[in-house]
Image 1 (cartoon, rainbow, N blue to C red):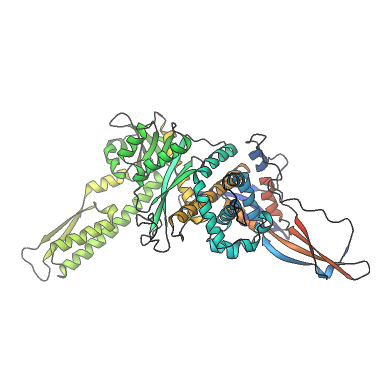
Image 2: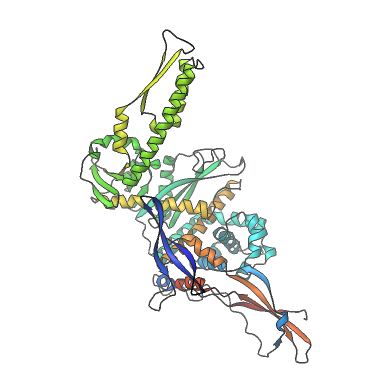
Length: 595
């Protein structure tokens, strides 16, 4: 669910309000449904801040001033006259989004963790602060380190919040910060597991694992991890790395590993399971993985270690259970989805058959489209042979093979015969004919919309098993967030260590993202932070310069007050629901020059 801002006029007055919207599937396609309209916060409503605080022990409960800046000095008691015509606004900066991100960083106590592990040296800016700048930049406006130094940091209020001047932030220092961060990867993962578990009462019995890829801009010749492989980004022309991510059933990050770009998904399972057990100990956990990770060796490996699993299976395995597809003992688990349990042939596993009405219509349309392309290709091949332009039978079979590869979903739909003509009449020397196979048609109609899962759990409720597997979408959403919202791709770094550090920064930014999403959910604001961040980014800070006049009428000093803009009504609703209060002033400054 996500937020949507509405503006309308009534009785000549403008009104702005928020609605909580979710996307739903209908017979006419995806539609958006308004779940609730969000007005002013009622007294009986609990704020998200209070709901979050209840989950913590009293000693760890965040104080109300967690997001407030340091206290500013009180103004002098003597009063001065202000020359109104000379009042001006200067040094406008982005404040709301970086203020919120800095608060999330401290809420996760990452500042304390890194300050305790990254030993200070001769650096002008502490390394934990440099890492915070990198992560906040990735969270608020993901881009390169050069962009952070030259553009983004200069227009934000982080100089006031962190006490770091613009001149102290340059790309070389940010690169060095990446190098300093990487050795603490495992400590960061363990810390986030504990902290996020305390904040949101997370459970770690069900672990979701998936793999994605991120491609490089450039050759990355000096990086052995940069290899060409199956590209999920549709960039087979670029080298890439593979990233295996483990999340909880709520999509909260637990850990990740980086693999060479040509690593098969099945080869990553053993490494990721051993890595999680090394960090968090061996325990009876349920691993949920897609069919790309499934191999008999991997499943045997999990069983030997006492692990449980719910995994997808290749489509070809569905044929073994053809007889069960026609039976009627299906259980509806949600509208349009039915499942049933089927005993495994060896007796130590259970298979879950599932079929979806929406998926059936999708696969039916795909089969029709592929069949149309396949027959069009066969017709073109036949016409080429009739014109005498295709005379070699082996070459005809090669072209037929490439056509089947392109139209692989319909490759078995037709029985194709390529034969020489005994007595050629005209230019044709080859005959290419085909007939549709009834077996393919029957199997397609029976299997469309069906898929097969397998597990070694003893659970007998098919609905429970199916819902646990469907939670794998949380891992898929995690990759979508890191790619689209946090822009983990493309990777511009070429050194192996810098690439790993870049991915670690994205991992930290994702932890901030999910923390905000959980906080919004507790506040009744959905779980899509992008709209909230865009609204917060509209809140600016700036210097109000007040020229003064002395009692004798002569120009006096200029008082500079660093202030935060007052949020509008719609923004106040969001802040109230999150239980936040913006500071009014950051500090008082005094200009030396006379006005």
